[in-house]
Image (cartoon, rainbow, N blue to C red):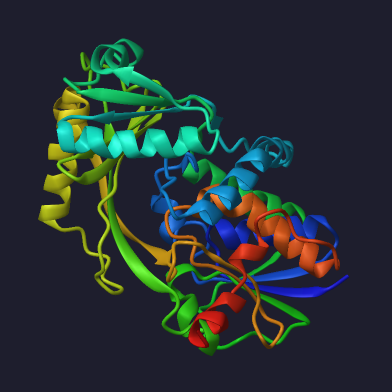
Length: 357
């Protein structure tokens, strides 16, 4: 049994604490506001490595797909702990409006087909038949293998599972590495402040997100995640059953500023109206801004730092998606086993390699 300190109470930290404690380790998690305090509480909940894929990011896709394969079992085990995390298997519909957006979609489709991933090209009419609430679109791409999860149910489920396995929660902000046999740094955008090797390698990426609810007489939310590029700007709509629709996400460099801007809300609503016109009649229930943890190359940092501290940060848009594979990598490290496929490419050792190139 190892005495493990986990710094960070978002999806990565909570998943790591639960998995490690369930495997018999003595775990303490440090976070002033676990569950609700970080970017995970504001996430869209997409588990979509294929529709996030882009040429040149093959290592990100490989790690994301490895984690996606683990998600059904991860969700089942979590539900058995007492709280269902709300995993949905409805797939993703990606749509394009003008010739430039269709060109982006063509590049994505060609890339996915070239690497053997399932993605069905659709005409605008076919996309509308799949999701009748979609507006007038030029073309579409259906990715049936993508999943989604209710991020807030997930976080509550992970916290409850940690309590079940005697994880100690210390509600304090950590300013230095805790004294423990093993330490995992999973503090998201703030991780770079905790370790010199990550200083400047992890940065905050601001993203605004809205939650909307259909009012009486409104068209219900779509049945699957809808993604689009509207005039070059990405947008997504993730349904939470018939009760809620999550709309996101702007993304830009703004340091640690978490204010919601009028411009960000306007861009999201205007883009969403093009994708799903009925949204203009929905109730705007929540506006918020979160800080994703960006890395230098989109790939997260998952692995040992020089002093034996384990990094689990820099997941960018993929924190929820990569939680199972990251937690399993930590457990493998603690037990002296081989890490999951794809994790080696995410080693923070690449920071030193680039410095010496």
